[in-house]
Image (cartoon, rainbow, N blue to C red; front, side, top):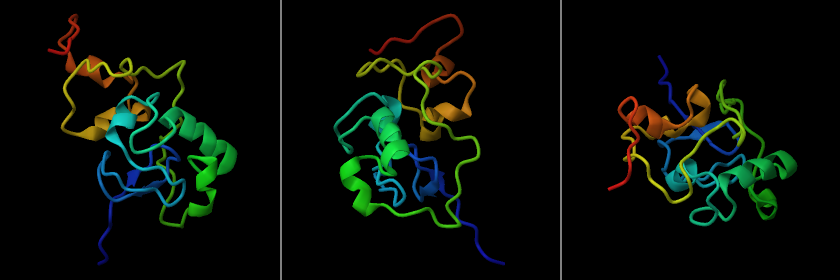
Length: 139
């Protein structure tokens, strides 16, 4: 029996290329996005591990096949064992809700996959963490 290695999706291209949980700082070989929990939580934040924001990087991937045009030489086509996460989709600013940039409305989740906007009907993980009818403010 062969072992099955579970992979995590790259949040930029949606391919199952990451060995570590979100925030591992692994670099996706398909789009060259560096996995950064800050940019996953605040996808309109540029700088940090990646020059463009996650939203910009997703647009760049659709346009150039890499998270940045200058990174095209570092990417490759996905391998057979790197399918798309079946439910992944790019961020839709009209649909997906995130905390305001730099504002932490809830503690960091222990399971960082709770930050995956495409897996939840209510994309604001911090609203799920707050008691019903009450908002949490950072202390």
